[in-house]
Amino acid sequence: MTNQPKYNIGLVIYPGMTHLDITGPHQVFSFVREARVHMLWKNLEPVTSAEGLTILPTTTFNECPQLDVICVPGGGMGTLETMADSEMLEFLKQQSETAKYITSVCTGSLILAAAGLLKGYRAGCHWLFREYLAILDVEVGTERVVIDRNRITGGGVTAGIDFGLVVVSQLCGEDSAKRIQLMLEYNPAPPFDAGSPEKAGKVLVEQMKESAKPLLEAALAQTKATAALLVE
Image (cartoon, rainbow, N blue to C red; front, side, top):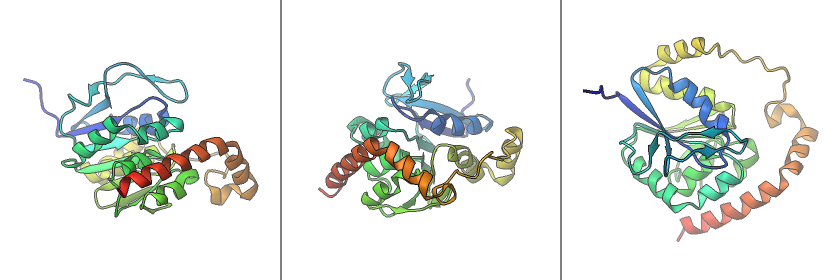
């Protein structure tokens, strides 16, 4: 008889996601011996990230077990499309009824908010999209990882590793998280001190906003449409 895992962790994937948002946490969770990690999508067809990395789902929405942790990654246009995906939103609502932790990385919090799962909560997001998260009636935190009761949300992209370690500390204790951090040799020493808008400086921040202008305009339109649906 197959041993049942102590924890079922579900990582939702979708076309156009940012792959590091999900592969970072996956790498951390893969060291949790008591857990089974599910890569979740509507079917078992390969899912291609915004960067061109193809990931194979392991479980469909319909066959997904009751999860202890559900995590949603962010992305660019893929996130905006997913915010309006009724099948995705319904799946998240269903799993949220019993999950111990409802979580996201980067703009995945916009998807959680679109499902109505962050109303009355404080959450994090990629810095470029914080104002859009606020439009969805969410109190926005700027920490690398934001914890509010059973909602755990990471900041942009690389925060997924920090996020994963925080989730492990909640599930299995701080010592387990520290052992995984050491195994991964996660000891960040970035070559440049430009990893946040506060550190990068106004010029670089404005250049980034300008280059992302089409995406930001699309995000504003989708966020307003989502906000209107949430108040109906």
